Structures are given as C-alpha cells and as structure tokens.
Length: 526
Image 1 (tube, rainbow, N blue to C red):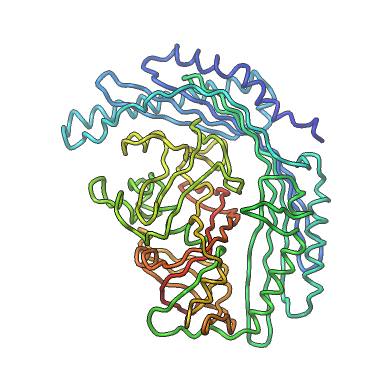
Image 2: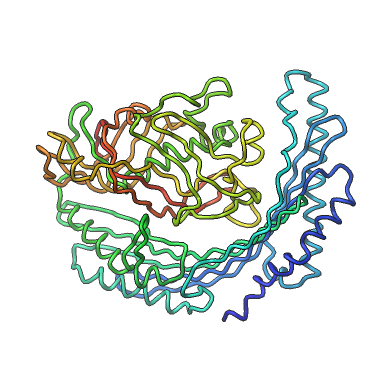
C-alpha cells in the first residue's frame, strides 16, 4: 500500500523544482516583492462501530496547494493576493502540476496588483483617513532549510480499513457489555499521514510530515428519568499504536481506545443516576480539574490571543478580544489575573498541537499570554506582527493545503504551580469540584463565559462529597482569573480535534489544558 503514495512523491518533485518555479515567476512579473508556495498531501483511514455492531470504514487521499504573492505599488501600498485549490491526482503528473501552480501564481498576482491599486486610490482620495493601508511590507527574514519527519510505529498507509473498523468494534462491544443503561453509543477511530512543503522566494524550503491518530466516543446513558450524554476524544501525533496500546506521554497520556470508551460510558451511567445540580446562591469556591480548564484556556485565553481576532479581522462573524479594544486601549502589560496564574502557547511540546514551522515558514515558539498575572502577548502571523510592531512567532496555519493560513492555537494551556491537587481540595471548607468540560457559551469578546461540566462534586470540609450532573460555571473572565488562589502541579494537555475558525470554516487539531485551579464563580444548571 505504501507504494501507491504518488501524491506524496509530488513533495519530492517540488523540493527539487519548486524554487525555480517561484523564481521564474517572480522575474517575469513586475512589482513582485515576495511569493510563496505551499503544497500538502494527505492520506486518511477511519472506521466506526455503533452499539456493538460494525459500520463502514473510509479511506481517502487528497492533494492541495496554496500560493501567495506580494506586489509593491509604485506609490507605496503593498498588495497581497492568494489562490489555492484541491488538485488530487493532478499532483502525480509533473507537467500538469507545474501548469496549475503557474496558473495559481498568475491569479494571485492579479489579485495582489488589484489590491495595491485600490489601496493607492483610497489613499489618494481619503488622505490621512486611509493611512492604515500603508502598512509596511513584511520584513525579510533569514532563509530556513529543514525537514521534519512524522512519528509513528505503524504507518497509516500500511494499515487496512478493516483494522480501523476492528479497533472501533472491539471498544464498542466492551461498552455494550456494561448493560442496558447504555442506551446508545458510537465509537470511531482514525489514522492519518499528512506531509507538506513550504517554499518562498526568500530561500526558505521546509518539509514537514505528521501522523495523527484519534479515537472518539459518544455515549447516551438512561436510568429512570436520569439522562446523560457524554462525548470525548483521545488523540496523538502518532500511528494507530497510541489507540491500540495507549500512550504514556508525560503531558498528554491516554489509555487504549477500549478502556477510554468504557470509562466514559461508566461515568455516563453513574451520572444518569446522579441528581441534577441545584445551583447555590451567589459565588462559591470552585476547584476546576485539568479537563475543564482545557476548555477555559481554549475559549478565554487561546481565541482572544489570536492577533487576527484581536485586530477585528473576525469581528463580523466570530467576535473580538477582551485583551485588545484598540492599539491604544488594551491589556498589554496590565494585570488580568492573579500573580499565581500564567498561560502560554507552545507548539514545541509533544501534544496534538505540535509543529515546528507554521504555514508561512516561520519557526513556532512559546508565546506567553499571561505571565504571573500580567497579559504579555498575542499569537501572530507575519502580517499582524508588522501591525503590532513585534516579531512573528509562527502561529499562522491552515487546516488544508488550499486554505489561507489563519492565526491558530497550538498547545495552549495554564502553566502548573507547585501544590498537589489533593491539598488544594483539602483546604476548601465548602465548595465544589468541577470536572470535565462539555459545552461553552462565550461572550462576543470573551470577557465572560459559561462552560458546562461533565461532573460536579460537593466539597465539604476538605472532602469530596456527592456527585451531581448538569452543572456549569459562570464567571467574568478577569474576575475568575484574578481570584485564583491555588494552582496545582498536575498539568495535563487534552486533545482538541475540532476547533473551528474562519469563513470558509477551517477545522484544526490542537491541545489545551492546565493544572487544577481554585477560584470563585457562580454555578448554574445546564
């Protein structure tokens, strides 16, 4: 099966010929200041089971490219143009591939010239009111040459679809053995090999490969009038071995798929028998576990720290950022949390959001968002870094080869402290222990939130008590962070497989998490 990977061989062809394709294009077109080319080949297999019975599997191959061009107008403005397309088997034929890339570059060039001309017209008509269009050309950088291999024991291309169906079926049958309280359940498994290359006219050539494997479980439990729906995923940047055997990584360990599904189903059964949370009056002490904090860090730290969102590029359809109202009215350098709390994004860590270079060829690096309570920085692209007057930090990524890169989280999390979670709970006289996340409801600028939990326990004189279902945490973001008075030493990352952003929608994989935290908030029922 590996021998059929002709789409992947297009990567090697572009490694040899891609620079000359770009160079000839740049020489032939007036005003080209910069151009880049990104190509990606993907192989994916999946299988599923429902209620202990097999379902069909799937197999797919795809190839896509994206090109961008910057044109400097004689009067000053820089125009940007981009084109991308899925091309499938066309990638296996070098002459057809080159012709399509040249067509795409010409299209992007025309768009860039049009953009530069329209900017010049607006500046001539509006004067100082249009000075924002005179954003400087993206500064040059050192060229990079690098190859990054995927990590796997089982190459996703070497497996059969039956192997994915079997691992899903085995797990589903173990869930079915839990009894009639499990009213419905679905188990799915996926494995994927993704390889990409980035080339630009500045001399950068970066090839990266990724293996992804993911298991998903959705389960419905019913006991009398008690009803519980639970859904969760496990995933690693590895071969299927991380689902068949489990993975013992330090930050993001996971059991094998069958054990993961059985544990989720057993929890759902227990919750179906538990009473619904009756919300207490006013604020209470809440201790939140790493799984719950994964969604807090995702929604309240990660998204509002994306510079394209903060600069209002998403305001029309996805909201803004509570960290930046404007370039002069923002939280940079100001206290937004307790001195005990820090948060960052770090693509170098071994998580679902790991990568070495973003889709602009920039090396990814750790970005501190909150440093001991002080807000300290955004995720950015080369363009938004120029607007903010900072160095690019390698955060522009696309979900598919033909999409425009957007600013995305990588591994985004709260940093650990030194206190064992057991001690954090033991110090609470009256409060609640909130575990697992389900559904977020976030304000337009993310300055407050309501996030539902899978489990809520009473804490009575330092001991965990009764279990409740259907509870959620409601808080003002800054107030919740500022009230943190204990940070655990139990940092965990949680695989997030489906973060959506942009129009057209791009769905990206990443990791979020943190340690156990203690703060104050209101509780509500779902």
